[in-house]
Length: 238
Image 1 (tube, helix red, strand yellow):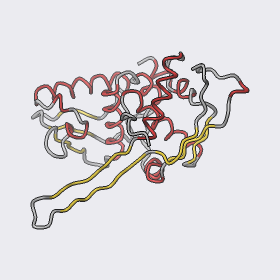
Image 2: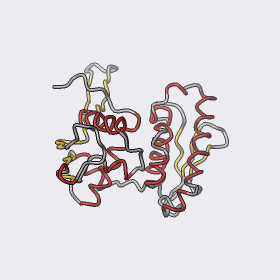
Image 3: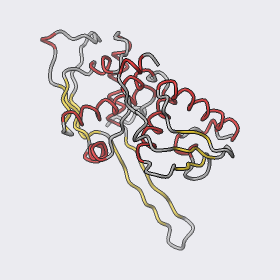
Image 4: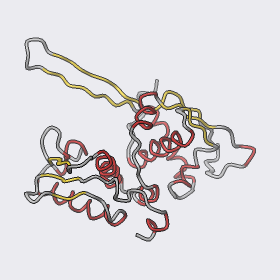
């Protein structure tokens, strides 16, 4: 048991995005790939020893991560504890070089695999999110903005017909969903959301999100016809 393994952070979020893509391509929750360093090529990350070491630790954090969901209702005569847990992978077998070289020689390469959990794989298959790889790569060093972009893409992809309204604050508000307690002051949070919408639209001009006239809600329209995924050359030149 490795209780000292820290929680995922920063660029670690690129791993589930990459593995989900491979799972859909291979149509299997047992994902095979030649080398973990292929993630560098996919997201156009620099290849060096320090990045390689960080990537190795990121896979460990990814595998060890368990997310708990639940509520504790203490307002009745019979308190209720309703919990569930989620993890990304059931098994991981990765081969790394001792010299931290992100470019393994041919004879050093072996089959690597990650067995996704049934829950994660089912979610990937039933609710795929059409994020643009080049946008994810461009935002790899801005995790907060990347989270916002992926969330907007997912939310707008599920909207049908009438635009959805997401309040900024409250139990199910955007502030809680994004976990941005540092922007819990209304004015600061509203400014941050407006700023992030502007930044996302630099890569996705058709982004169907905006702030309501009263400044209390995020309005999201359907992105079914908003070109969520565009040709790579257009994204690169955005």
